[in-house]
Length: 429
Image (tube, rainbow, N blue to C red; front, side, top):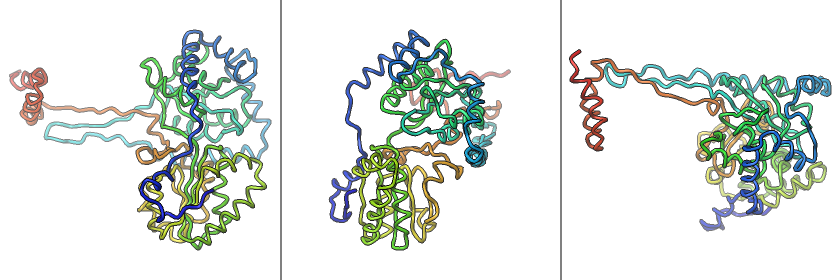
């Protein structure tokens, strides 16, 4: 973790600090993914079974996880584990449930002209959960819960073979309609185009490696493919600390994100050099006992401790970085929230670790990374829906707005548009 004095940097150097770690570019990724998409599109289940054997080293006969297997998974979890999952799901449901009911009905913009905005659920959605080194069952309820609240008719899940029992149990509790044992770009292809076993979906959600990310991008550009969720990259956190912070808390929060992946990035911003030194000492001590020590150590190489002159400047640095997670571990955190412009999710005060949002506070942990917090928000029920506008004009309403529309249409030389209004105004019936 490099040490940086903010005021000693010029504008370009400051911008460079915000550069996210980028995995070594692999020019074969797009070509390989295109081959996978093409093969799954043409050969369906046969291609999925072949790729599962090739990439996962597992030979399977059935792509869909049966109810017996799902029910048996529950017996493999302890009562404490099941209770924890249930509490987390309940809190996520509470937070997302209040996001419903936001239709805009009958706004009269001109006498006789009423406009509405209505939301309708996306009918079929597909969730992707990667395999990797951790069973990310929490991502299932972070996506399935808002999908169900939004009213999606069908919610399916794809994940690599041999899913952890907690994943199957969580999917069952969330009402996921079907679980399929297929991962990687081939899973994205299956959900985008459909196979004999896996139905085509309208929109795909979920994280994955560079092959999954590329596959999602490619199918979203194909009119016969599927829409996708928000841009996703390696996880990140920015912690603002002051002289009241507990260095042990701050170090723990930084390491919590660092253990995700060697491409993750963690940033400490503080105006107290002694605090920075104490946090770095704590990082070294806590790192030594982490089971994922090597991963966290790799992420720390991409990370920095930034010394600033004031809390005001710390907030400015954070806004420039636009972090996925922002922790305000300062004495007066509530006083600064109004100054935060760009962040996926914000955690206020010393007793609000980012882990709460990752699991069970109720907010969603599917968040924009790589600076996309400038233009994207975290997952809610809204991405599982689409909106449509409705307008209604009475005969008098049409007359009231006719001259305006006719003038605008004529200015654009779209005379048929003008005539669609004119013929109605002149109609005496």
